[in-house]
Length: 478
Image (cartoon, rainbow, N blue to C red):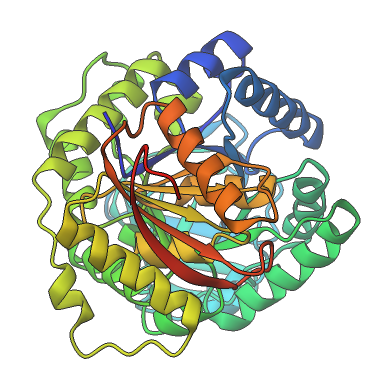
């Protein structure tokens, strides 16, 4: 069954063997996420090599996303590993504290006291603990516990409403970008960007680090700061896509605000011809259970119906008991949700103008395939731009993008409703089109007599050169 929505999965201790990873790929894994918050450079390099080898054995490309840690602001360590905070009691966050106790704990971000003032609210451990700031004295943040609980080593800190000044790219992130480029990452996810400048700096660093390897990765902005919401359009304009990172975002803006923000972000990304990934706790119960909850099924399905390019797994596939079963379940949910998704292609095209020939051809192919009931759209593309534009609109007609470039093939593995395929195309247009149809037929995506819409550029092999649309029946002479 053709599935339009892509699946991103984090690999970790539960999924770092070739056998498990092969099963995950067969179950529907499209993009592997390497979480740079954990593990060493050698760990990531070994996993990247395993991904490439397993993908080769599976006969298709699987992309790699390097997810940077970013300025995760955390408490330090405790003498006894943790403490218990009781409501109404005082507790001190001290930038100069070496080892915490029941009265205070250190900070890994030493400038936090400068960002705070009395009446600010701090949320620790993903919002499970709430502290009210009473006063700030030098390196010490004096607080009163509003909501208590156990606080252990290295738990995260957020300020309600955002406003912390920590830069999006740390020294560790800059080194991790170099590592990511050396192992051939196709996407770089930037944590906690506040504005376009953060993304532009990350792209520049990635392009410089990737130059010796011939890599220019796609840049994904993780939207998880309150300050990123008003700057969303500029962040989109400076990125190749965004991730709706619902964990830290929910802590900063409140859980209740996230569903509407998710819908808005997905809509804005698609309108801007950008990618969008929906992430965080999508199948959380499957860390321990072999089936998802009904609420998780609805959550994944609603993200699909919103138009997300991809849904993402974190701990479920990195550390859970059922990484393969989780992907199988997620894939099945996506397919069922897509069956009921309504196409509004004609409405999408109202009041739109296209100034580029290649974009006009892409939109014409969509419109034609939709109204003629074509079996497939087959796009010969060098950079993948034609496939990206097509993927921004839903038609129930699968798009097959054939490219001679491995990098483009991997990048398109995240495009909704696009199946990327490798084709070393001929310089003769008709020969290339015939080869493309043969590839699609050989893989079972179309059969003799099916109507197929083709797009191609002349002369062949020039990025952005798509200028021809052709409608054929499989088996006819081109």
